[in-house]
Length: 246
Image (tube, rainbow, N blue to C red; front, side, top):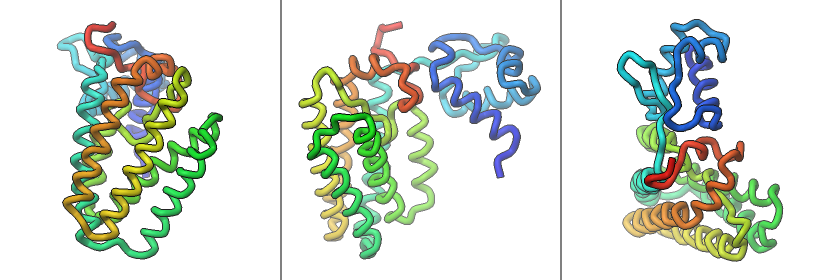
């Protein structure tokens, strides 16, 4: 059961990731406590928790400020996530994928392909595709049966835009975006086939390359990311800038 501190920390986390505070903006204990309608002690502890997560930076005798992330930091975090998922894919392959898990994963890929075949022209379809993308990555972790992996991946996904749900469809170049989506789907099919065939090294290599392309796409599509800065479906996007941008 979540404690009061857990709840306050989550509320503050959501506030920071939503862009209510600008990167570099100072957070004062009194103001945070008043805004969340909690005690100063709880506000201080919640800010300390977000410092540990990397969302806030402590300023000596001046409270905290919101951390600014660069698009390169996002890409680096995605690469780290790829290494962790590569371990998961290898272990899943070595363990052998049960038939029920294989069916669930194939169903995810089939539905995603059906959506992209229709062009992903509306928000509902794109949102569903994102859900399916995240579900596929989750199933790989599940198949690995490594309890240490999940908290490690959750931690790296605290970097804005580093998780598998952080996908932006470039409305200015929809054809290009669809090519990227189909490439990701092909990656997923190859990764699953490698896991099913118990090719652990190949599965790990494929998912590393998959993560590399995801980070590269974040750089290429950064203008679209900036246009989506206020999107509630992309928490943390307001904290990301190019190097040198303020």
